[in-house]
Image 1 (cartoon, rainbow, N blue to C red):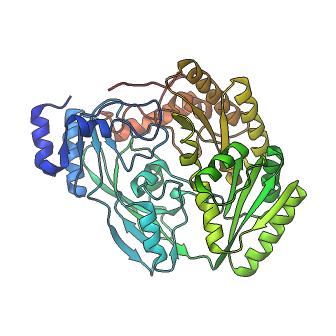
Image 2 (tube, one colour):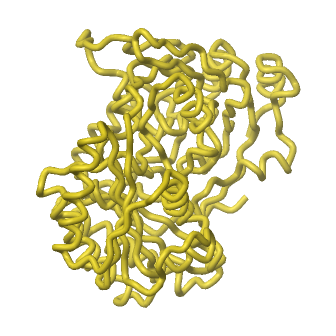
Image 3 (tube, rainbow, N blue to C red):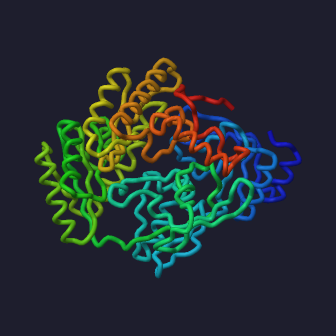
Length: 470
């Protein structure tokens, strides 16, 4: 709990309009997009600039008050749920584009900027920022940085960390540091920039980021390949990559997902087949034409019953939008939708899809699968009801089995959602206890009082998901 003295100091730093501790405000920020996790913060604070962030952190560090940096709350691993109370830090006053540097192909932004707004601003200059998380209409750059977000274009272009050139970060003690910059080469000391990207708010608060831009692709084409068998679609993914073709997008949707997405989007998706691959390529026109032709041939060789190429950008955009709405569409079916992500080497996609289906049958749960098949990142999504405790127990067992299988196949427990609180019991599967201890050592060096997003990332053993009631 915050003392009255600390409340007065926080109010003096950010102004009374930017300090909230009424019950309604606390309830709003007691959870994120992750089912089964909820806990009340002690206050919600919205600093107006880096200096105010520094003052807030210094005060909280001195009083050992937890800080939870939060973007739009789209987190899917309970990474922004205040499990230990403390202060939720909002960035609604820090959402500016500071600079678009067309000479150095960079953009410098504040953490509260909405991802899609930044993408639109960049594209208006004829430039391109490739990372495109499905939540980009509402997610913030700060959230993308903390989670090292991926997206549909990750196969060809990589993820958020591949575009972060420099950061301004406030450390837990209030110190302000800058890492990296507008440099093509920089090996001066440890790569602190990459350390903070994906650290899930456990090491410091990012208050500014300089991001790399690339030229806008000349052209792009989108296609849909239909399959009567899920495994055939998965084999086609492996075949495309094995033939050294790297599409911009290579997405997978199974039949249950297709049915729900079509009901939601109503764009004419087929619902009587078992799986589709949504494939896109961009680049010079001749390269796109060649690659799309070769990909279509490979899809047919791998039992595609139909291959359709979008006839217009409007049709292509409808297909992309339909894929991005998969979670929203599925969420309409049951009271609780648990979206997970497990990643395996691309050559193991077929084996992982088989395993997910077998695990769903074993535990008698309903799992729809879609995801970024081209980079091995699948999203098994369970439709359930949190009020049915017996079924929820089986759901937890199923996801635990999925995580074990992913690691067994050379994969990982999360490709883009982060560890947060939801997956911390399984981190040892990927890193081992020695790896976790190494990470804890880094955390201790930066944050000895453990004020930065405590209760996230680290756990010693597997356990059930914890629900902390308000």
